[in-house]
Image (cartoon, rainbow, N blue to C red; front, side, top):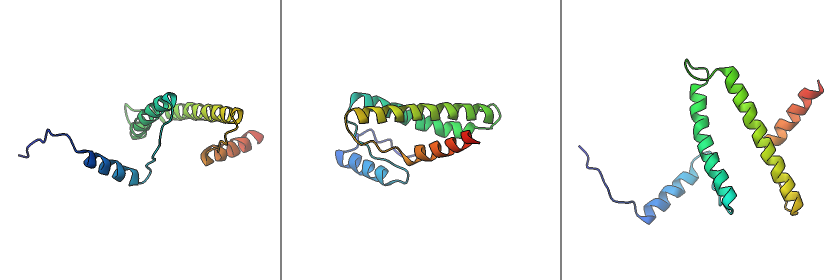
Length: 117
């Protein structure tokens, strides 16, 4: 049986772990500059973990139906769009260049095409 190591990892080990995590596919490194940004990052981290569980339970027995999943994701898209709109307004007010994420631009284009039909 292996012994349990109760010692804390060294600073170097922690740094190595962070660097390796940053190299992983799909990872993002973010320097948070504000208390509000820190809170939003905490929420985002938890959302991302919840989303993984959501996808695993989607359509499963005693899980989430596809209809309910679609409603939840539509609500999530609305929240993301509202936050993007707010960030654009804030940026415009302080003359800071806001780049709308490609995914939002693509969604707006497809959503606009559907509403014209």
